[in-house]
Length: 327
Image (cartoon, rainbow, N blue to C red):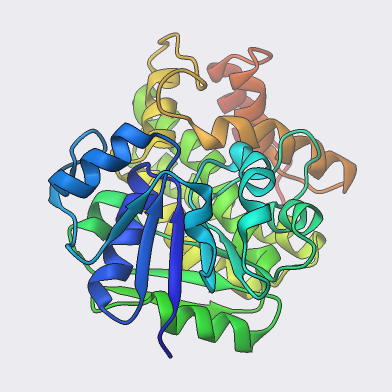
């Protein structure tokens, strides 16, 4: 079935998604941004060198700076950072078609409330089905047509499968899920754990330590997902383990690079320049874990380091001298 799709957010990830969906040739795709001059340039030059240097955007991809451009779209992807999604919902909500499905493509937790992004969007857009796309996929890889697989979750499998069919392409494969909780929390928590992996690298304490963090971080993630009503199996898939391995090892990851800087003792602001989603999610996840009485020592340590409450050397000692368990 042919769909009309709008991708809202003209950063690297939004542009890459719009390009790969347009290349599949099954849908009419419009990239929507708020900067009129940028959208005019993209339409004429077919290049977005500020975020995807050297990648030519498809001729079939349409561009607009008008909110009205989403009217008539059957699927609308919100590809802006997590903390901007509520504002986007309020801005674009009045222009959504009656039956439009909204897909959040951000990886985070609403900072003010601790809510999942699907919960927040359901609050702002109560008349629309809300889905989530997450998993191991860097914007540059997607835009270059390199093989990438991610997860897409909706409240029911029928909607998830429809979205997977509409958005997937020759080099971009989506796996359908009905576990929105697990898919979202996997995407949010892996950013926190990637910062921890970066600290390990920046501190120079070895690849064995990184492997331990990935394994024990996955255990933390699983406990949290189950406590919030998600499925443990989801964490062992693309949006959990797959995304964690990618962002915890690749220097394309902003979260890993931020952690490396912390490990080296550099003064870095996670809100300056490229947004570091994991730095925002760490304190929220740590607080929610405490409220749920869930043990998440790595997440707690990352939160405390970022907030300046704990030195890295002390955090390492605390993690290594915790009581022995059989978890």
